[in-house]
Amino acid sequence: MEYLKAFLVGGAICAVVQILMDNTKMMPGRIMVTLVVTGTILGALGLYEPFAEWAGAGATVPLLGFGNNLWKGVYKGLGEDGFLGVFKGGFTASAVGISGALIFGYLGSLIFKPKMK
Image: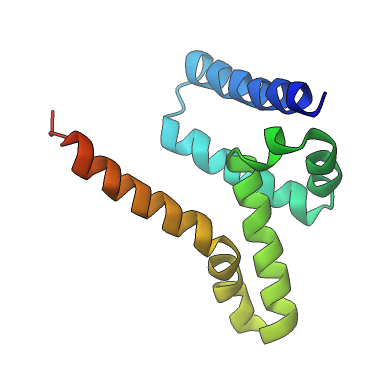
């Protein structure tokens, strides 16, 4: 049942994004930023954690989860380091995800030899 719930929630998020791409003039980059900011705002309001616990990986893996992760890092950094924590907290909390994206993107570029169009 957990897998089904995660699949349905993740699919619903993707469906909303597809509707935005098809019916608005928003570019994919702006849609991605909108998802990250939405996750951050929902995290700051305390709404994202209960949703993520209920939905599982369907809510934590997409860009909404990344925004929530950034918020948690900034909030923790603010408590530990004061104003400087606002700047370093998000990077500390999401360092593994960002590093993984960079490393696997680089490895993918070595394997598949991308070309400019």
